[in-house]
Structures are given as structure tokens and as C-alpha cells.
Amino acid sequence: FQWSIYKDAWLEKGWYAQFKRLAEFHRIHGTAVVPRRYPPDQKLATWVQTQRRQYQLMQKGKTSNMNKERIQLLEGLAFQWSIY
Image: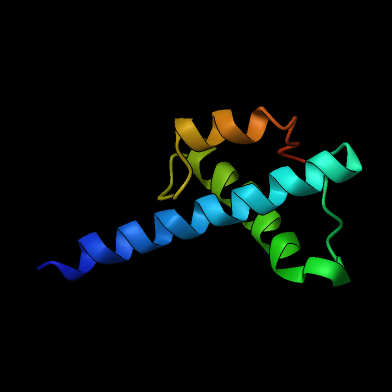
């Protein structure tokens, strides 16, 4: 069943596209903390929240799309896993 391979590749490509947008946000604003409501790019704000949620799931040993490579990339931008 080939669909999962293509789907995974598509999702992976999407993750890196969003990461690139976060890196650009970081370059401009000096931080990777995207406001929860960010009208210029709400899709990025939602993606950032999703990364935090995926990380928390991984920490709890639950199914998650987060992995060590993604953690390293995000932490390279001083990504904050919790904003509380």
C-alpha cells in the first residue's frame, strides 16, 4: 500500500515548509514565540501550538509526530516548549 509513503513524504515536506516560516519569523522578530493569535500568519501560530502539543504527547510516551531531529531544529531557534 503506497499511499502512506506518499502521505508521509507530503506531511514531512509540509513540516519543513512551516519550520522555514518559523525560522523567518525568528529572523525578523528575534524570537520563535509566535502569538497564539497572529493575524499576519495564523497558520504559523497554529502550527507552533501543534508542535508544543506533539512534544508533550511524546514526553508522555504517546503517539506523536515529534522526533529528535525536529526537536533539535526547533531548539536551534530557542523554541519554548511551554509558554506558561
